[in-house]
Length: 257
Ligand code: SAH
Image (cartoon, rainbow, N blue to C red; front, side, top):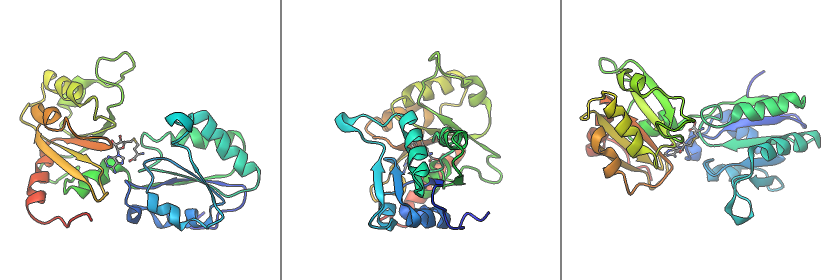
């Protein structure tokens, strides 16, 4: 079925909203929002996309609960199923792609277990798009033949970490770190301790695609210090391609705003 087929009552669409600029949502994602009876949104979803929903759409900000807490994932799963069972067209809009550190599969499983019809509409993931918006390609012919995307949520050495920093340091791929602002000092130290050249270029791009996008660049050994004042959300790129950030900043990139 085409991703543009009408959304039937009683169905759920899991929509990746891209990195924050509504212009970077897919055509199918926009069409789903335009048909939504209920829209469940996250804090990283593009705010302007909410204006595409019909005025009568129930918009639920699942990032917020009274006292600043987040809605637990189990509750979001229940809401998807409850609204769909009530015959509504339910659109779950989140940042980037829902299957890249987005818990999209948990929501898909909740729907399939409840036998609620569900459609996945992929999004433009920040792991590729945010570097691109700063003029950094995650691959470049003759320089690097791959890229590795990791979550920095769990720091190296933590019992819950499953990443092999020796393998990452030797991978020969561009490393892209999401959710890694607070842990950047530990991550970059672990990479250098495991043999990554400390002069390897790195760049931190905060609020990619927003008018206040910021880029901080420098060698991997220094980047955590240089980016110490950067607030999330930010993507860190480590590898030769990160040196394009400086070139791009000096020349061609259009102002984001
Ligand atoms: N599913 C999302 C990622 C969710 S994890 C995707 O595919 O993009 C959240 C992390 O994404 C943030 O901590 C940050 O590392 C990154 N991120 C998302 N939007 C961003 C933006 N506009 N600018 C910089 N980083 C962003």
